[in-house]
Length: 156
Image (cartoon, rainbow, N blue to C red; front, side):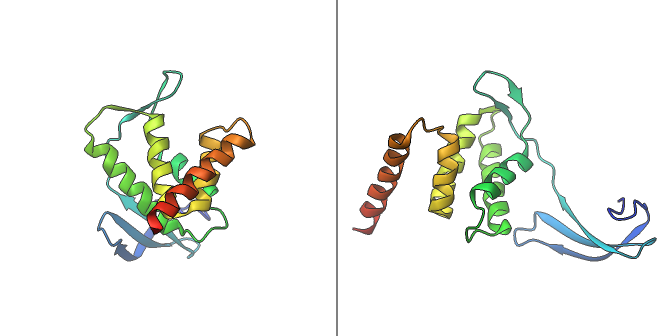
């Protein structure tokens, strides 16, 4: 593992820990050259289905893109990075369990919308405004009204 500070290749692991689900190993490393510490994460690499874009192009699953989109939607909200990682982990397991070689980006978008609605309603509205590409304020208000109607139905 190359040191992110000095580029030296010699380092040693000073601590290793597993996450709650035993799926990710976090390793604290010490560079032998500059003696600075850095963290690496090790996770099982699994095959994800290819994404079929709206125009028919195929694209490899990119966890980083999904996480970054969620971080942007959850910016300045009480949603931790750990919550986002757990959400994406669960989503990836669902898509793997489908056993499909390809899934549509619409399926991913709808799954993100469903999960965000439970995670944080403000983040949900932010994501929805980009994902649904509202053409005007009335479409945006219709989405909010639908959300409010659903919440009132849950409380009764």
